[in-house]
Image (cartoon, rainbow, N blue to C red; front, top):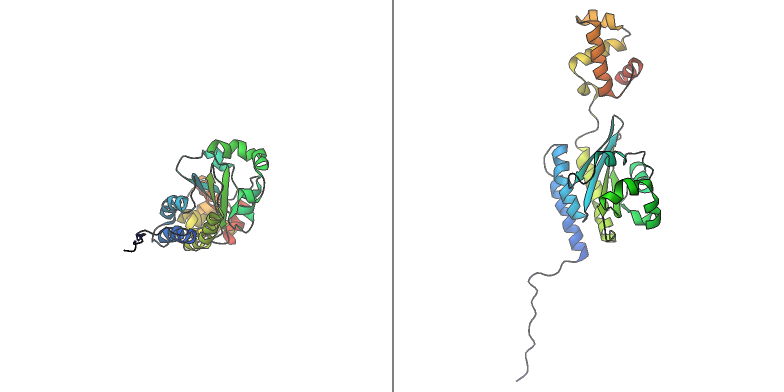
Length: 248
């Protein structure tokens, strides 16, 4: 009687690298399609991004013409305030410079320079080495004309694979579109209080503090305080800059 060849079943076929990458992308897309405020979106997105492009830590850096650079980290607390502040658009680092000012395509640290060159960077000693960030992958999106968002994935080892780069690059336009729906910086009048807007309107008409105070029925000192608050909100330092920004 002929021997029978045992059948080998595969109830759970091993997914291919392409299928794994697609699953990672779809997991992030599910979060991006959710209806929520931007702050909540970022909170939910960071842990999913960390799984989609496997990393020890993920840093979310943002900057626009109105505000200094801001940051978030996953896990929370994985980087200190002073360390994160060093990663702003003026950082002297080829990888960060490309992300802040270049096309923002997904790029590995190892694509730009050697480990020895990386270790000689001041940022390596002050920021990345304490984090254990010896392998890095970065990408950036520009959801509107004023704002740029940089996402930095960090690992101790091994280096990010080409598949990780492909997943990050596929996610880039999706993240940009999701953030674009929140709009750019707030319109000028949404940045200031109604009374501050009244003061700025009269300032643009050439009135002095005393004339503005008389027109609005408040004291010159109160006018001055309204202007001080408006300067901060508009990102200016003086009356001339405030008037120019308010008219633009």
